[in-house]
Image (cartoon, rainbow, N blue to C red; front, side, top):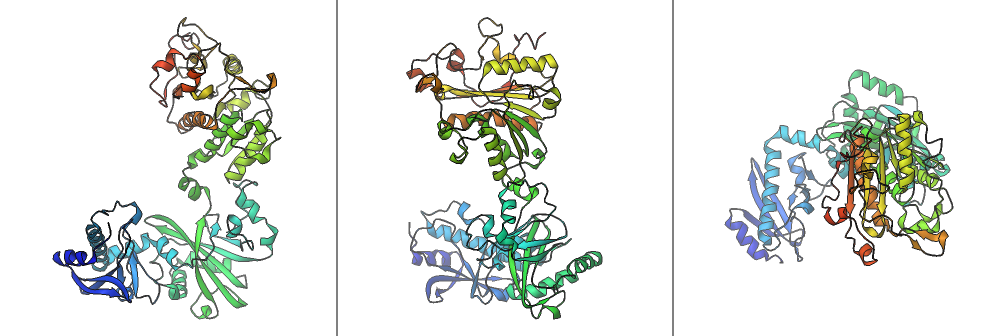
Length: 577
């Protein structure tokens, strides 16, 4: 519903608000005046013809007269500024009664301004808490992003963007130190930093950690004075260290990359200094005369900043996992483990990536003809900067895999080969050699009927053989009792002779199976699962049934899809010896 502004004026006036104008800067608007302490504050709402899809905005008229106010943003000399009252998109707006939406927004603006103007201590704390947002407002919209790596005081080289680059790391100013050893050599940021076009021109940058941040600069013209005051208020030791570290260089360009604490966490930002003639980094008001300063955004690029913000867990970065099988399920598992924060993956699979794999495998077409494990290791390292992945060509039962010392060096072994015979033989080897390695076995069934995963933890009740107890005889069977399709059925499709047999399933089914296996893995590695467990996902079974295949009693009665349950079977002869 569109706003009737005459109705709005009547509504606001009836609620005790003073409407002092119906236009502003020659644009249709409503100007509301209210008293806050000694101030007569004017707020302006520009009329809109379209419906409200977000919380209506009011602007503060002549914002400079109020000094530095938290959440009030404006350009120097601007006749109005705007208040950041919330994430306006996240609020459900009463668009059926827009006059109520406008009134609600107005009350939020007045409440925020009142607190900022009447409570100076709160206002100052909020200015520091919102330092990052305020600094962002000072930056030119065309400024490129600076990527800083380390968290401590140091001197770095900052390279200019690659000319003509419009996206990716090549389009950013880039600062990488020699001590960024955790980054793998295949990560895009490392490869970009080594681009010869960058090496032709770079500037010195000085990282400065400050123990306490003041309020941000009020506007761009205050940058120089603010910077000098920041230096002068540093503890003597920190100031002298910075002076000594930066004093040996002369240039026409410098960067000062600053980090400091706020109630919202550590904030990183930068000053970019330029001069027409060479000189030392200025450290007093007098030395600033020939320098121009610009505010610069900084995107901190290290594990502690990037991984949690991206949904990864830094506590997993030292965990190591052996993944056997890099097919459609295994590849999905590897990618999901990487996204969770696992940084040490060893991949093994003798198979080669082929054209037949394209539509249900996550590897791109560029890797056709390469060993899947090698190709997957490259993809992981390109995607996850701190990933250390290695690919090998061994099978599950090869002797170099079946080494007790090797297996026990991993925090977890994941087997995604879909071969129950090999999996049972491998399990027999683990038992015989008393290998204390936690193992996940995962597989999917054809026609989208479902997928399964088991977690076998040494010295915990429950093992792979528990999943092979025949529900009818209660003895060991040859097919998993988790399966939804009856055994001894020919499920494969003959596409072009015996050499082209395959089990029909889609990339979606691979992903669903990989997710339940990865979920088990992450829960175990984070200490959330300490007993052997099993989990299944169940499809509707329509395709399999329409093809005439028989389903198991478990499929007919299974209603615990995605639920992690104990693996232990009371009839398992191995667990109940």
